[in-house]
Image (cartoon, rainbow, N blue to C red; front, side):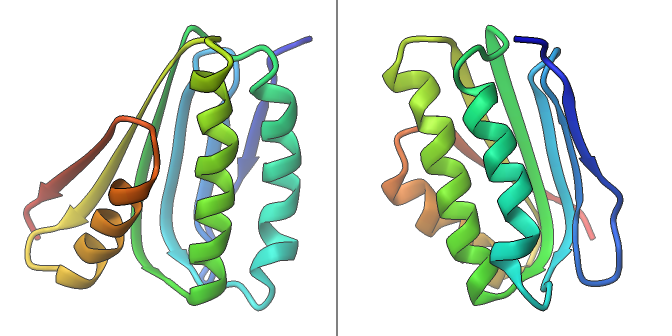
Length: 129
């Protein structure tokens, strides 16, 4: 399978999605409050179905969301579950870096919740405002 990329430019209500299948460097950045989160994230989740079959040796996901709505939270869980398949299938390493502004306890709490139940190395990384 050719390792392509999945890229969506950032908009007011949707994040930048830059998933480079060849390098394994993935990034989500911005706000995630689309009108229909399931519809917005479905093409990415479909792309990930193919990626996890033949991933890069190391997958690095950097997430820096300012805000996400409840539907987006569920989509993130779906995304993490798909990425867990890489580890379960012994097809490579994966690490998630959840970036949040110092003092943004809401985004930190969301990251802590994800970290508590996914089986992927998950780092909570603060940065100055």
